[in-house]
Image 1: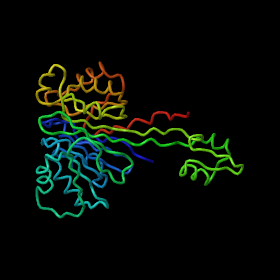
Image 2 (image 1 turned 180 degrees about the vertical axis):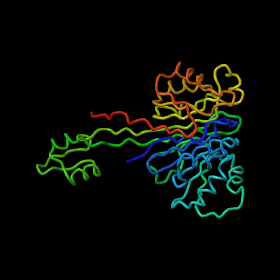
Image 3 (image 1 turned 30 degrees about the vertical axis):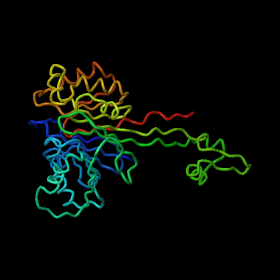
Image 4 (image 1 turned 60 degrees about the vertical axis):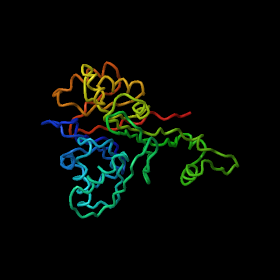
Length: 311
């Protein structure tokens, strides 16, 4: 059975608290594991969450402020200690190349696993060889260069047993139809894939960290099933949020509503808010879908697929 869920490793912004580790988010997607913004302490949080470093196949860094990247040395070295049987791709802003290299080689260790650097120079698709999805990046608005990420699964087809039976199609013929798009029956008639199947909508998820409102937020969030987005401040601190390149809970919720997001996960809370009830109240004023206030070590499932179109 496929596993698609978000494992929250940390929810603090610049300063961790007794109850919030620095950032860290692992999106499990079938056989892939995308680790977003591993802040300080991420290696230990993985242990608490019961997730092996073997699960990590890609690392995505939004920007090089410390709370989003200082966990990289420990994570990289743990991966090399555990020796998973696959390489690991690392995506990050190209302008931070020197920071990536320093973090990669922060101390001496025996390198046993191939780390594939994939610096991002601008908006567009990223190399995601072998993945059952496409991965794209969009620039955000922050005092240093920052990118958000979007994972999109392509649409597929779902066979409809009643329609297959009506045409007398069974066994290996079903496989040929799915592979070739059409088959010819014994009576000479042709049956196409569209006649006996429905659209299987692809799922999607987006990760939006430190940013002011900008076009990139809207592009990343458009129609996604799961949006993980920063909500550092409340509306009472909107000016502070703007000045420091952050969002309020209300802004994040409005962006989600306008983009048609299905499930909204708010995170990256300032230490000034020991209680996030205010974030939930603000978000619900603007977004009537599912709102999740992220907590360290919680797991958030990707919403079930939308119903297929049966034509």
